[in-house]
Structure formats: structure tokens, C-alpha cells
Image (cartoon, rainbow, N blue to C red; front, side, top):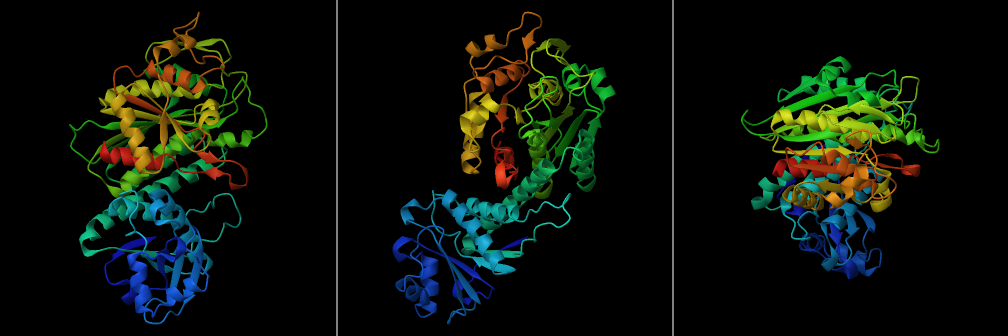
Length: 492
């Protein structure tokens, strides 16, 4: 997808399609009114005829409009002017992609980004434009004989003033990078577990580094992890024929003495629950239990596209959780890299077992902050559904920053308490800590578990169990929280 800016008057802009908006009751934004005037009131006549009222998500295509150079005008309803927001703008952008593809149009000029909304800057609006259009390009191809038709629209110019051209381009570049990262995360998540194994994830990370000079990657084997004392992580993969791996990716865009922000992803490429076997219903969706790793990989891909002058380290702890004669059993005790012992009361609470060793490993990078991302708890889905990511942190400033970045990027997260009162729920009679805390406060006790391994740095946990993928007929990975992570890393 090619993005550009356009500063000429819209009525004098040649394009296959000019995309304009109209508010409820026929109120026209300045840009639409100018085109209407140049066209001899063609849009006013359409409104008067009742073909469009301006109600949100309406769409009308006008052909061969006199007085302007565009071959077509796509008129989109924006609803009430006072209610027009960045979120509604995003919904209308998705509608515009559908309409452009419907009419097989390869290029267009967008005249909507200059509309006022939520005091959003032109850079923010342009970022959202590129993100939405790039996100819409994704098609799953790997295991189908005939993929869905490719997106038709190939080139989009965003109308802006001359003074806004620089920030518009900056927003487009960042949004396109985020969209590419989301699509990487989506594709990794959507791959079946017989293809996307821990080894596959490691190979994907190495291939990305081979193409990008700012990225250095290594993949630690089970033998190397054993020497490091990562027996908690290794215990998860004991029942599988697939070897576990620890993937370490270092993006170096700044000086060596600049502290990196570290992101850690849970990469359980398939989760049967192990000996604590899950119910069979919808178990196929447990291929998505590596979406934390996928979002981390997508974020690193986005960084490689954008090339910001920052340092970021990504750590992915990947294993397959299977039942077998070698599998970890409920009641087994394992020793983590930190030296803390863990009683494994439930082998289906395996994400925290791989993450704790990865979080201990993160200390060696002297991090500015550490954020882990994981499809960790069903309790988070019960609390937030598929709308909001769960957020827990040992640092108020970091938590507030992530919350705001989520709101700004339209990839929201909501903080839950990480109070000492919850810590007693994961005490064990036979080890330093138990890996579950009972039926109540499941998301919080999972966070309490991880917090015991993150006392030496500023840390936050993002539980994406509800937001990483959609179920049902629209089943598929979402690419979240790549937008939140990129927003945070670029502004940390």
C-alpha cells in the first residue's frame, strides 16, 4: 500500500475516487462544501433528494461529477458533527476501504482527515488512516488452496494543508509500520500449531533479523536454557516432542548506553492444558495461545519498518504444552531461573511458568522498563470480554503511561489492582510459590505470581486473552496489542 499527501484543492485533484464526508442533516464540512460549490451544487442536490442524510456509515458513490477532476466522489455519512471522534473516524475509514474494493478502485484521495475530532492532531489522524488501510490488506494464504481476493486499493493520498504536510507524512509512516506489524502478528497467530511450532517462531525471528541491520537475534536451545536454570520454562514443554526455545531480539536504533525497553511475549504454540487437560470444545483456538509472542514479533517488525532511534529488547518464551508420560504433573515442584521454587498445582496455568524465567532473564539488559504480553487468563475474558486488555503493574507511572497509550492508539487497556492482600492466595506449603491461586481473582493472582519475579525493575503485564483473537465466524487473530506497544515504545 502506497501512502502520500495531497495539498492541492480537492476539486482540482485528479483521482479515481475522492472520499468526502457529510454530517447528519446534510451539514457539510469545509472540504465537502468547496467541492460542492465547484460541482454546481451536485452534492447539495443529492442531499436534497434524500439519497444520503449524513447518518453515520451511509455511503453513496457519485459518478462523473461536473466541475471537478475526480472521476468519482465517495460520499460517507459521519453522523453528528459534535459526536465525531477518532473512534468513529476509524469506523468510517473501514467503511471506505470496503467501498473502494467494492467498486474495484486502485487509487483514491481521502478528504476526511482534516475534519476536527477529539482535538486529534493531523499526525494522529494520518496514523490511523495508514493503520486501517494497511490492516485491511491482510489475507491468510498459507494453508488454503484459494485465498480471499486481494485488496484492490493500492494507493491512497491524504488531503492536508501545506503546513500539515510534514506531520501528515510522519503519521502515515508510523501507521503503515504499525499495520504491517499487526499483520505479522495476525498471520503468526492464525497459522496452525503443526506449522507454527516454537522452532518456527525462532526461525521467523532469525529471518527478520537477517533482513534488518538494526536487529540482532539469537535463539536459545533447551540445553542452553537448562544451563541458565530455566527449569520452570522447560517444565512446560516436557510433554511435547517439540523443543522449547527462548528467542531474544535486540533492536538497536540508539547508542549502546541507552537503556532499552524490554517486551516479553508468551509463546505457547499450542496449549492442551497438559495433564490438567482442557475441555475439547474450541480447543482448536489454543493455537492462539502464542499471540503474546506474535504481538512482540509484530512490534519488532514494525520497528524495523519505521527505524526509530530507540533501543528495544524482545524476549519470547516458547513451548508446546502437551500431555504425555514425560509431562509435568499437578503437584510437581520446579525451580525457576530466579531460584524460587514453584508448586505446579495446575499444568494449564503454564503461561506464567514460561514468563517467569523470561522475566528473570530480562534483568541482564538493565532495562528501563519491562512489559510482558500474554494470553494468560480466562478470568480476563470474563472481566473485559474482547474489548479491553487487562493491565497490572508494580509502577504507577508505567501503568498510567500504558493506559494513555492504549487510549491514544484505540487499543485500550484497563488497570487491575496488584495489592499485597492477593499475594497470600498463591502461597504454597511445599514450595516458595504456587502457580495458581484458586477460583477467585484469577487475573490478579496471575499478575501477583509474575510480580514476584520483577521486583528489580519497573514492570507491567498485559493480559490479552480476550483481545488477541476473535472467535466464531470471524475467527482470527487481531494483531493487538501491537498499536499500544508501538505507541508506548515510541513515546517511552
